[in-house]
Length: 558
Image 1: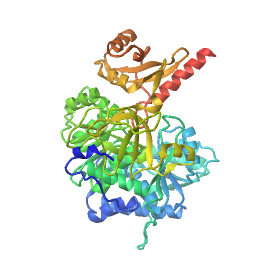
Image 2 (image 1 turned 90 degrees about the vertical axis):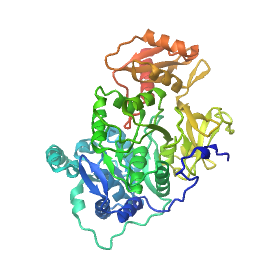
Image 3 (image 1 turned 90 degrees about the horizontal axis):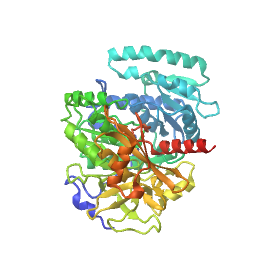
Image 4 (image 1 turned 135 degrees about the vertical axis):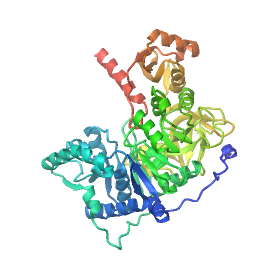
């Protein structure tokens, strides 16, 4: 293949890497052997070293094995970002079982599907979620519940207050449940035999099953091997020049592929400290950056919008940040420029998808950024553009579907052979993302194939209109949606959240769009909202808004 992107690699990035055929838990254990006394996690000021984390994961794995965890089994994780998540994740993998990280915001209905589909018999969670977990029907395979007190991982003065809040939920759950209950802290106190060794696993075996967010339909269980996760961690480490002197802030959820590998596995491979936040809050994130001085972090565009919108942002020192890796949704020029102007940080756009673990392209860490581009393929990642209609390879500048060949590709979708065959063809991963490559090998996404809006036979890519929305000085955030129309097939509607203190009319915005777009691309409707529906990582959910519009139309026609 012609790979023009090699010319623009940073000097420290090779064209190819060697990927060790090891289980994922060796990323932690090897770093612990090299520097046991170095800090791994910082959670509201409380630190855990690499050596201590290895010891805790060994203890947890040994206890989990006694509960039946092992090769061929699945163990669900329903936890916020915390040291407990790291212990659960690496502990599960040391038993030879596969980890099934789940979104803590899932409803009981969603949890029932994921637990049943994955076949998870054991779950690790916190008291706050016990009521939801115990509302699941008895027909699910879940039989054993391990609860972790977040208080046990906080500094003493914070932990005492938190424990008082958590304890009543545990007592209530244990009285009302038929499930077997176990306390993580008790399991971590159990001694480990001197000859204990983690389970031997084949690097090609499934390590993690992550469910897609369901933004384009029913959630799919994406099966990822040990080898793929380890390979991706090495790619990220090299691309971002991760080393023990850097400090990663982890605010993206670990249960998502993006947070799991970019802010957890890759930094642990590099021996870095990780500053952990349980969830995103603009003010808490700004305070954490100011106090703990991370050098790197990852985010989605809506997080940058929220940080930039803080009315007292000048109070916080962002100067430690060398880069904020941005992905999961398009980074518009307006969002990037506003964030960099207000914080001095550098937003580096990249691209990935859970079917390839996570990040597999990005703008160079130190080299040339092209605003609007998702960057260059990582070492050992081949990428090209193919025609949506014919599947033929397309030259630079022409739009088509982005397809990839990478050592990090998924094993497939769980129990979905047809969907797997549609996505993996002749060694290539068909992403469903529409875009193009320029002459330098930088890739650009114009839209999702399934987000394409067809107005009276004309193709409209929502991202073009999204870019215009964010360029408007009154807009905080917004999104474009195609809604059914009897005459045109579809029409265009935009949803907008205004900046605090601003006011506007629908007519004002439609005139704004008329000034910048050809007639068939001009939205026919503008709806103002106080907030927009988002996924757990902050991606605005276009599908949810479209479904709302469909329901409105059905109700009107009933």
